[in-house]
Length: 88
Image (tube, rainbow, N blue to C red; front, side, top):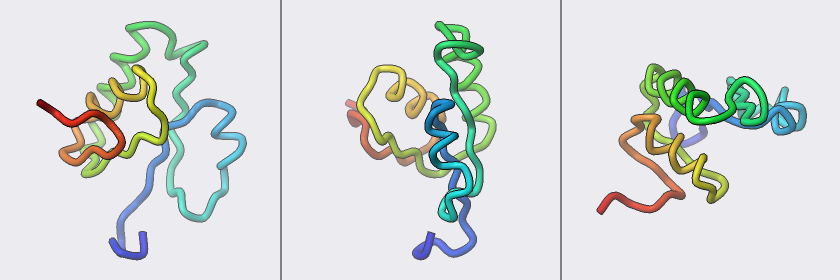
């Protein structure tokens, strides 16, 4: 955020991550992705991808290496992705 003055940081996390990181000064918005409830299954992943893509993020960073995370990061439409397998 220091290097990109005026930028915003949106975190996509689980309900537990939301409880832990809510109010963090480096995070402007938290989007809760609950894979065990409302975002369960393929339909939940597709809904989340559409919502992320609608935000037109410039950069997506994956903090963990899971299939779901990779799908959401790639599906976000962000032109720059960090922490995922590069396009081939």
